[in-house]
Length: 163
Image (tube, rainbow, N blue to C red; front, top):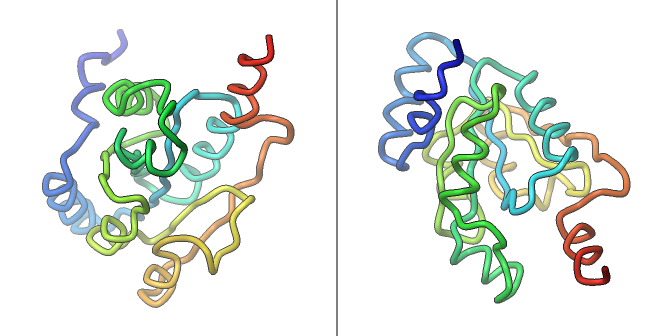
């Protein structure tokens, strides 16, 4: 029997997540954090999140709010609203906690939870990753996940527009 009723319980408000992280730290759990829009979910996301989950005991995913996606990606985005994106991520076996953040970057959220490992896609440079300096200065590490070539949400949307 699958525990599908627990899926929504993986979605936290920021203040609830901070308390959960404190509880997990008491159990010496290694906290991993990644973030993104996750607008149209694809195999590149699965690969990145799987790699992130392998870096520790608990995988927390920060999801850009609808307002921040519009600011970052334009008025036609997101395709799926923040609650749908959070629920989809919560349904994945490799995720442990999902939190929606309102800012354009997760810097403030990262400062509050201070993960042991911060994971972003390989298309980033460590010096350009929000929170990387703070995590490293706190003794943590930053990992660049390998990209799956030829797939991205932007490419999928372009293909849909051209078909």
